[in-house]
Length: 322
Image (cartoon, rainbow, N blue to C red):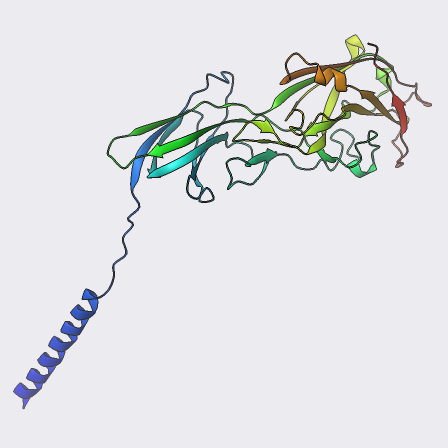
């Protein structure tokens, strides 16, 4: 009887093994068949020799499906090796250390990939809400935007990563994506009566952002916020800030505004039309704006008072002397 039972058990186990083997033989095993190759990425800084970003991003947009972007981050500015899928791409490079100021959109499209800045919700120096400040005439519908930081980028079309063995090289030549603006307000009376260390300012009609893949400014205008620093020895105000230049769509009016708060709490809004200085700048990427002869009214109380919680601003227009 025991021999018969052993025989039955052995036959059952043999049948189960056969079933399992038969089942395995009919399963489709999934393998990663994506062909890849090692690529050496080089960031050549000949077009921006003073650039020193902490990290760089390479975006590979497949030619047949640009939305399937393949991103690589290099923790340096020189590049390095990567393992990339074989295919044809549009390559877009951008410095990756932009987390403190930059916003992006249309990241799936190498033609529309945009870098821009957040809203300026309050004046940097005084802390007053930007909803409570006077706006330059004609700019009321423009978004109040923060000024950008440094940004560099490049684009190469028709990048082909092959399947044959051997390392390929992709060389990118990043250049500046921003413009440098300098503002000097000369011959300013009564600077000693200013409350605070710096002065808030704005410039209307600036481009909202830059198309990274084309290094061209976007079409939508914004009012860009920045600050000016008093220069007591020269009775002047000086400021330097970055912009994305003029909008690509059309030339816009450009009004410089600066917001002065005196020790007695009075608020003064000075404006000046500086469009011609921007239009006629020798280098549109390095613009110098000069306004002169600004008379700040002496405060009612020349002592250091407390700034009252009021919203009234006295507006003064400064005519440029041509």
